[in-house]
Image (spheres, rainbow over the protein chains, first blue to last red):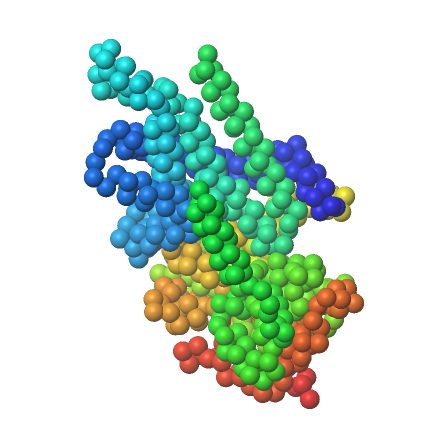
Length: 231
Length: 300
């Protein structure tokens, strides 16, 4: 129990004193995770939309593969990207390894399946009649798509939030591709892993509490957006 | 519907049957440092231990800080680390029963063959670090409170260049406590503190073609024991400051009655027996001796 109290008060202390190191870590986390979420959404939402709307051979297989990729371990993504961008890899000359860019690349690969799959299910759930009505009312393909996306927007935003939660909480890719360099690629999760390695559990849990606080703040923000969209 | 439930039940049953139930009796848990594990020495010693005594050792490789922490929390039966001052404190605080010096190796300062800071062949490690800092050549630090990191901080202090102490305040046992570590001042982008194990730090330094401090055992394994040789060279070695002694400490059964002290004790004594000490001396990586036994005289 004492351990938990210590962690809780340490978290408060960290937040209260606006610890500069903590600010740095939180900034890196947010910057990397939001970049990868935005990029993955730009790819995943249209992809999910197309897959849901089009009929083509192999569609079921594709969806099964995407579903499988939901269970993609971060270490696998990490290793794969590592092999490409390390000094000995094909893209070694770009000097990407152990940079924030490398982390973003890995995270985008990780969450594209999440956003795509949830978008597919969001779109599929929309009543077929919306689409048909829109088309009978003379909407062109783009306008029809817009009507359906509007109807599915809550579920799509939920997909994006889930994807963001996945990347801000993951540690494998950040560690392998970012390298946990203090001040450059150290994120909240890699910092926690480090405190665990050092045996400083109190600080580790305190960082965990800070991460939850930050996520809570973000979710209030998303909630606000969704609420406004409803009106 | 009924079939669905049946298949779920079958999956659950299969999962249950896969979970480890029942284990052999003579197993002890040991926390050690990543550099010990990465050196490959344990892969030679532990099978021999099982042959001699029937004891199996489960090895958890971490930084020295975490390995000692495992001991303090009673998570393991024995620890095998290299940070002598901290080990002695660990025993004095009553967590360990005794410390046996097993062996030593040494640290080396590694860097790219191009050697931008020009430290090749220097005998004084602190001076070499000073030159790296002054040249602002990239340096990768373990930064994980490990034995190697402890050594690195001591070397920075000895180098006489201005260093900074950074700290984070936490609450421990209801009191404020400062966690701090030392790094060279005038910090620029050249000093990278990555907070990872020895092997990872070597590959990181190789990627960035940076300088780093490593123990010789791990270095030799990465340099000569792999298909793809590590692209870093030893640039500074032989300074007595770089000396790196390893100690083994069974956890105190008075503190934690559940630890298997008898087996841990047997293992520790086995490590310092003349036969095993000779094995350690014979342990070579590509023809180079990696460790120097320390207990030959102590073991009667």
